[in-house]
Image 1: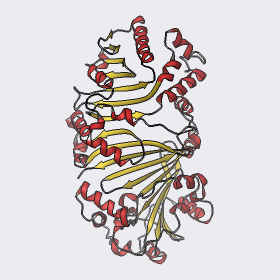
Image 2 (image 1 turned 180 degrees about the horizontal axis):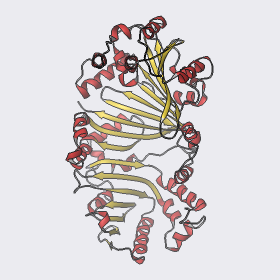
Image 3 (image 1 turned 120 degrees about the vertical axis):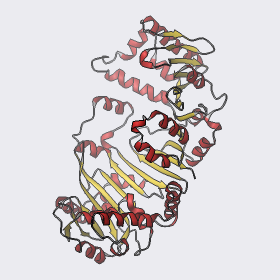
Image 4 (image 1 turned 180 degrees about the vertical axis):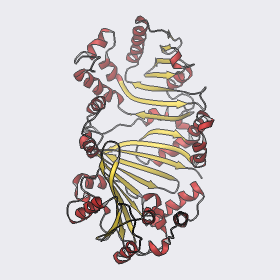
Length: 505
């Protein structure tokens, strides 16, 4: 059974999409996990989203806690239903959620995007589990006949909503034969998804590439090759996991290539300046740098560097990239400042050999001065290095310096000194917000940290007054973010990542 749908029915079905799913927090029929909505998605669908539309237990409690702390909403389900009914009334349609939807609404809903042409998605469909097939069929039958091409109906134990007749037929075919749920790559990805999620998003990266023409920009392909990534065969799944005082996005993917991320750079991260509003660190950066050098050496850079000439050309200039890469361990980056004039930051490289670090920086300085690069000046003090000044750089110089086992590439002398401080003085490790961020990640090593109030203060100072309308609307909600924590690791051959926003009360 199928039926074209009017705007009113589209509005009703929107209530079971992830953004409105919390409306299901109220009463209604008995929910049942049943078959996954992915059973109605075509096997070639490159994007699929599945969400809980009737959250219960801890998930429901956490959603309600977040709604109260972020928006001051005490009854989240009631608030969403009220807004939906109000929107329907404003468009001249009457809609009673408790009578029309709640009696048949199941536990899960899924939406797929069937086709991608490189710019836009088409052929979308929605499947919603129903606890009462007859009630959901009666609901569809009562809708007025429209004049658009969208189609609604009931397939097996699902109320479905399709962009057009062709998509509806594809959903019928999937339900009776091969579907996305039967695809091994999808099943493996969803099995790796995090527990306790409100919504999961599956992306077939290779499928998107194939549908958009099957080509990748040559420079992007070179980067992927250097990292051992087979993008045309990759998939990923992201899960949205609400907590009572945080929101987590957990990602699992085989985009990590043959060697998923490993190592722990948290020691470097916590040694960065305490006043950083953002800081990131990457373990074993030297290893990846060496792999990238080998790729450039093997393939060259079209129109600039012939194959097999990259390393030898730099050696003639006194720079041995293989030695540099072999001595580098981790990479850290931080940014400080609360306005344009105080903005600063640096990249920090830790090395195995302090002598090699100093020699590398000195050789680069000699090369630049010998080449007649203007504005290059040696710096004095404990650090060895130089600064570069120029109109394009703004009021502060670019500083490249080494001290001990650290190399700093910094914007401004003050940032260079902080970068080379090597955990002396106040650091991120002394910050209460940083400690909370580390704790929120559990056993996953922290690789990135953003101080919510600090980042918001800088954004407020940098956004022009004429462009602040949207920012000011979002500001009351952004003020609730205490920190962002990023953790990166691996599980088997899957690269994993967590992004957690800590919510202040």
